[in-house]
Each structure stands twice: as structure tokens, then as C-alpha cells.
Length: 329
Image (cartoon, rainbow, N blue to C red; front, top):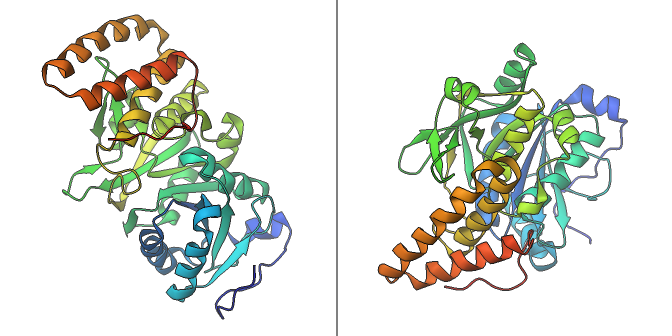
């Protein structure tokens, strides 16, 4: 594909050692049908991170949206370069590297394309950020400094700010029903074994990600971040937070708040997560779900009942990853 944008530059091909000398942090932004938000996210990152980080735009489902992503970049007048998904070249400083992924691989699968490239290129740390985020304060330099000062920490969170002004850095899984309760600060993140770093601003060592097999792709959407955090803890890594790095998060831009898509994957993946990491609680959770069905029936929430039933049925059948059938209202 030929691009006429004068800001579209040819990628260099230095050795991995030379690349790591230039930068030690790669920032991965996954886009799925939201180029306007992704442009805003990168515009801010170029202001703060252009000389210290490798910036990667992963275009999920590019068979359908690749032309739109290229057009958005050309019209933005930001410097960018197209990269091969299986290559080893990184974008020059101050340039966005666009990687087109033909199919929709989900949150983990899409981000892992960028993470594997960064690891192969010799980059030491990665910062995975949602495309519906905007860096408010701090930078990857603050995260990298914290990582160097505390090598026992494998995964770092930041301060996230919701549209309502709520500050959080991750969540903890409630022991009653494994729902998520927002948390903020390093103390609870480090001490609570059920706490995890939010996947919308996730900073970690790439050798840790490589050791764990990268972000778990079988979930497709939701519960990848608690699974990634639990796996890291089980291998002796500490989780913590750098609170002075603040990131605004629009929240659920691609899937929509309380959308059928969000509810289905959250419910199905919750069952898979409990089965894998807390099997001792599985029988209790199975009993509780029948009380939930009764409550939904009493309230006439038939749509949610269907989603709950499909999620549980698919989990029991071992159907993980992306569902082939559409999930409608």
C-alpha cells in the first residue's frame, strides 16, 4: 500500500542493541473502530513521549478498518510509518508505528502483536494503554524510574481518572461474587492478593510478559488483566502503583457501558477465571447463580437472563475466545 503523506517516513533497520540504546519503553495502543479517540491519545503521547518511547498503533480488524486508520493518520499530520506485524523494525523517535492486524484478535491478542515485536526488538518495558485514555500528568520516565528502583515489582499501575472524577489504579475481586471493586494506591495493590492492575494503563517488564506467555488471549475481552496479575503474583512478582502518573480514562468506548457485549464476556470469562485460579469457590458460585436467575426473572430482566445463560453455557462447553454468533439486545 502506497501512502502520499509527507510525514510518513521510512522505518530504520538498526540492530536490536542499537534500538534499545535509543529507548527502553514501548507504548502499545490498540484501536478497534475508534480512530478519532486513538488520534487524540497519540497526539498527547507525542507531546510527552516522542523522544523516549516507541509508539505502536495496533489496528485490530484492519481488513475492515485499515483504510480508515490510514486516512485518520494522514489527516492528523502526525508522523507515522507502517510496520509489518511479524517484522522487527521499530518506528523512529517521535513517530507512530502502525501495525495492521487483519482480524479482530480482542484486547489481549491485539496488544500481544505489539508486545512480541517490542520484546524481539530488545525493549525492556512496555506500557499498554487503552485508546480511550489521555495522559494527564507524568510519563513513562516516571514508571521506568520506579521499575529501576524496585526490581521486585513486575507490573505497575497508574492513577486513572474516570469521567466522573473517580481516581483508581485497578480493582480487587470481591470474595463474595468475584465482582470488581475499584481500588487506588500502592498499599492495597501490593498487599491484597485479589488486587490487580487495570488493563487500560498497564506497565510491566517485557521479560515477565514473555515468561507468562503475554496477555492471556483465551478471554478475548475482560478478565485478562486480573489473570495476568494473578499469574505474575504466583511467580513471585510484586504489583504496585506509581500514583503521580495520571491518565484520564473515558471507559468502555469500544464496547459501551453495560452493553450486551460487555455483559456476555464479563460473565463467561468470570466463570473461566474462577475455575482456573479459585476452583475451591466454583461450587459456591454455581449455587449463587441460580439465585441471580430468580432475581432477574422476578424483575423481568429477560435479556440479561439470556446473556447470563449463554455465558454460563459457553463456559461449560469450553467455548472461549471470540464468539462467532452476534450478541444482540
